[in-house]
Image 1: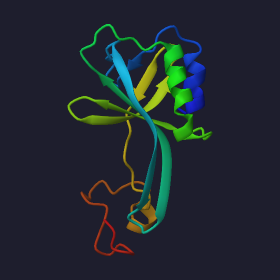
Image 2 (image 1 turned 60 degrees about the horizontal axis):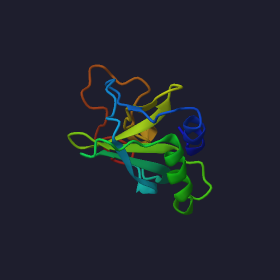
Image 3 (image 1 turned 30 degrees about the horizontal axis):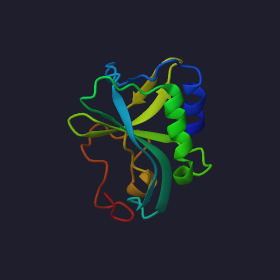
Image 4 (image 1 turned 90 degrees about the horizontal axis):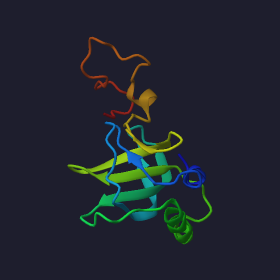
Length: 151
């Protein structure tokens, strides 16, 4: 989900509700404690330099049970963050504290924002010798004969 999608969605709802992948709803007194731009500059295991940028929303809950984030207030927060986010329509990643800080994707079902699971992947499968369909008999897809020794 992109920032523009969140803004459109906020114009259609009366309350801001987030649902975790397990189906539980964040308490209605949650806060948006941060909105920012995150840059990840890295080299994958195949030696390719990469750079990713995304918007990051950090959600948090405290003991102030009377707090409610209205859609209009959330839109205002997004407008205030424009000096950090610029005009880019970034994909959004959401952080939410559970037993540790979880990172989630974001979707919208018409009434509720859905925190979606995120997954890792090898970005250089060809360099690591990972077949399209991993060999079911092998516990390890990487071997010492990989072209560049990655993995």
